[in-house]
Image (cartoon, rainbow, N blue to C red; front, side, top):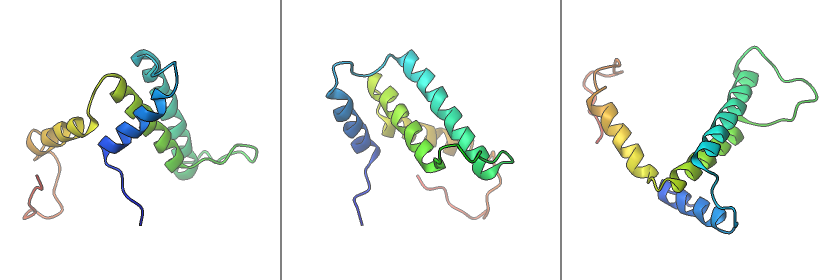
Length: 116
């Protein structure tokens, strides 16, 4: 079984990859446009696999997994360029869900404990 990378390791890997190019990271605005583009490509694939709009015979075969990977790469690039630790960002959002939104959804098991 291969090693599962942490978010921090993924951020370092992307930073090392981008760091080899003179151009470096795109501007935050350009990366936001790329995020929108990649999200559109993901939406298209989800629509092909799970929606009513099936692929044309001459369309390139891509997967939802591939498009999610592209989206994740751009998210990591944006975070790195803004010096944002994605693990910290994740921890903050999970804290918000576990506190502010803790009673927003119906739990499968009312006796269930929240994992911190």
